[in-house]
Length: 67
Image (cartoon, rainbow, N blue to C red; front, side, top):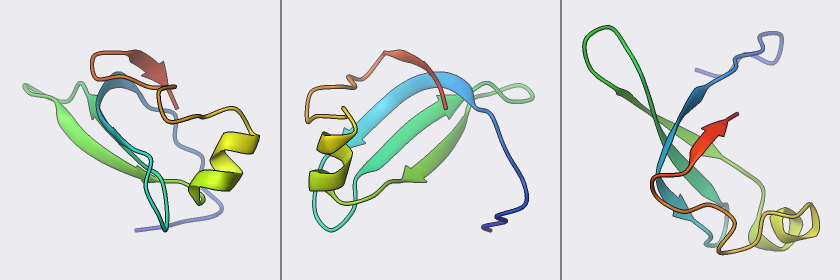
């Protein structure tokens, strides 16, 4: 689950970007052994995400990202 002591870097493709309350979600497909693995990244609320530069159209399906 969640481990504050561990840092994970994901390189993949955006599947879905949900800019909704109460939290923003980023669904990203990361290459795995044989087939892609879907990761779900939970962010802060939309107002906080917008303040740091992630607006509603910041990420689109198909975008390549490193998280």
